[in-house]
Length: 443
Ligand code: SF4
Image (cartoon, rainbow, N blue to C red; front, side, top):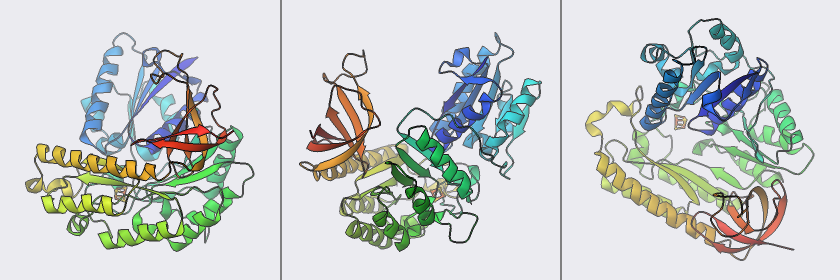
């Protein structure tokens, strides 16, 4: 029996690709190991959103390359977004790499593995997607199954590498998605998250197959489970979609809508197709129609040329909209993107770091305020894990804790002595911390 280890970096899409790779490789008799040192096949699924993660990928394979000296049959695959971008250059830079696999060629993996086993060194980064088939997926044990429904992006925000690494938007066939959802539910998953760089742009093969249609199909599958979808481009959120979220009982009250900046000039320079007023209108509309909805966002600090005043508009926006949580990052130039060419406008590292710290401080305040709204309320929680105090190093809180999520994606810690992962329970929220709520089980 041969063993494969996959190191996954970056976003959920990469994690989902890795689950597919593990499933496909089982048919070649490769079984998953968590120990890279005992693997016969090592795969790194890389992320190129920031320079730091790209650097980490190269340093990881440098270590693997050294192992090859004592284990000449070891095969190394460099996959994901950095592979898609750098292609053949990776073989020159890292002569111990056997295969460079682009983001759109994942389903070609078994065929390519057979060829590298026969001694070839290959690059497959063609932008024409390799046709998907109904494959086995080895999902990470969890209550939530991530299911990609579309991939790629046509928006070309000036800072973003995604259109160059994941290609143009394309949606998966609805029958494959629905069959994957049913399989995940049969395996015991209790939550389905539909995934896409612009999930609202989903367009199935037939007329009328949009995200709302897909949510209806999935909602009609029998059984108790939850449905989520990420990530939404602000202006792609339609009234129909909001109506659908309100109407369907399994679809959760949660939207992730990246704003990136609260300043109109910066938004223009980012090539985002909305201004602050438009974003606010979308948020206000959702909040007025869906009680207790959670709206989360993404922000970049220190975009090229961003002035102090423009940055402060972002802080103001975050507070004014009472965003429930935001992912934040300092601007990192990415080769090929438009903004990366504005070298003269780059801000010094210390300015970016200082702005990021202030953004994070605002984020913390918004999160705490958002969490405090729920103290005293009763909420349904889907339990995701148990941390027993006796398992060494697992729990330093001094009590047994179960952790889960509410429908609106709030994390809740509940003192409880039994592992009931996967169960839905009713909980009374007793207190709010910055990043989570504490609650007690309702008898
Ligand atoms: S919409 Fe999102 S994925 Fe597409 S280019 Fe902009 S930031 Fe990147």
